[in-house]
Amino acid sequence: MLLVYNSFLKRNPIITNGLTTGFLFGTGDVLAQTLYSDGVSTFDYKRTLRAVVYGGIIFAPIGDRWYKLLNGIRMPIRVFKSEKAQKVSDTIARVAVDQLVWAPVGIPLYYSCMAMMEGLTIQQWKQKLDDKYMDTLLANWKVWPLFQLANFYVFPVQHRLLAVNVISIIWNCYLSAKNSGVLEDIPVIEDGSLRQS
Image (cartoon, rainbow, N blue to C red; front, side):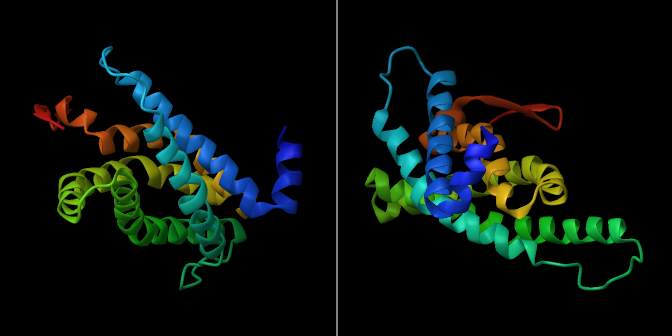
């Protein structure tokens, strides 16, 4: 299966990444709608389609370019003689850039694209960002840095987006649920006290 994927990736990287990413964003939304179903509402196919469109047309080309760009990031000061230790420090630099540059931009990009596809007004779009941005960014920083350390250290650049996409099924489930508002009513235990999400 990986050989077939690699063959498609080499011949048509943009299409392969777009189809894969769109499918996995859609999978995350289906998972969110299944897990957070109230038993009354019908399945929202348009919502899943929006997730597929965002993943395949918007996120995939940006993610592909982003991971290629990140591959060129090196720790600015070469302090280690060991090649392995230097690889670790370069990986840390890549994760820092990813989390401090992409995450703060990528999260509002997601919510903005969803707001446009949902037909929200400018005021509703701004409110969505105000309500969801910081919680999502903090959740991002709890999930992604550790995974990205492994991703940048272990996987070659052409497979990083795929690795992210596989893990993203859960993250996309969270984003979809957060975007739809179903997570707002779920109590969360944080710092030993119960609060609304």
